[in-house]
Image (cartoon, rainbow, N blue to C red):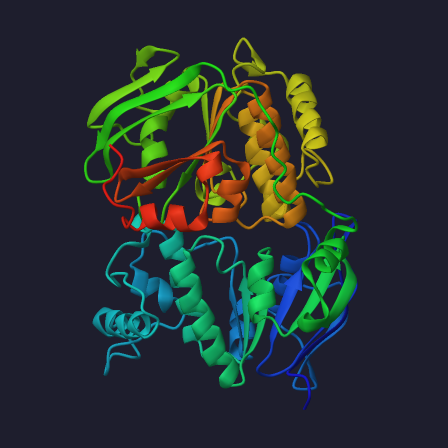
Length: 504
């Protein structure tokens, strides 16, 4: 049989809005098939239909030439299909090993009927899986205390450990380092050799051309193109995805850098943040680079008051301030777009409108009662200005794609009119068109005189949009680079402490 999987003429709509319109996809054994498209193009919806999470309105799924009905994720797994989801959804209060084996727990010999779980056996098997992929995570650790990158690695291991014949990878590299990406690619190579077929969703062009054999492109829920990766190039692929040419990947606004708006002096937080000092100016985009686990997020979390500092000073426009809680940071006109929109950026039980108004609810209220008209007007303004794709301001936030959810997070903070804005991995899991929208927004905010801090694991990104870069290594500033000094080699030298004496 030539194709292990065929999805023919798949259609799906939500609340009368077409998300997929007669989309087809074919997959051969041992093939890496890239599925590309902007956020909201229908990629994740198509894969959720394949996984039995959504029911298609019409169409046919064939596995090894035989029509099948996939009724649930458990049913998909039984049919040899597994998925690494873009939006991580682990059980946070379970151990890592329990998350790896959830739904297929190893039972104690002799106690199978009583369904007594053998935790020691699961930890042992998890350690073996991690060892085979050169991953250093304690299987006993409670998942809540993992970084986003570590959670991503756990999801990757979990999907691969199912021994599926079809593996869907939805943005698997969005939160992991270059070293970990190389480990992932080695595993993909191994799976290919075993005849496993992989559907790979990513917005990172370099990855696609490195590992994909074939590419399918969706645009606005319809098939926009299909072909061998060797017959495509970056410009052609972008044009197919967005329906227009994007000339500048990293548009950089020339801004006037003025007074110091934020100064951090000898900031410490246990072993996470070590004696950090720097200044941020009005109109400046300050990049923060470093390897995952270097302390980048921990530094900005301390500034924002998620975790209080153990010593040091934070000054806003020359005045020392005490920030022991995010509400104190908000009072001092600081905003923070966190790296995990699902866990810390959004209230997933409410609507687009309610998420946009979340930080500014007091401003939109009278005598403690929310002014619905003002709230709706504010939401509609940001839906329009940020081009958020949603059928209504009253739509559940869960119904939006990842990229559009990220725009809602931005809207939530911009409505509060902050002076200092911290972006932690602002374009994680976002397509090339939406990325450019966010870069343009960052430039516009800097031009308005805002002080901007951007953390990014993508070196071309942090170099493309920053005026200056601080490189963090083991919780300390290892180096500082001006725009004319930016190179990937210089950043990596400092990030891995190979750049000589650390900047103090």
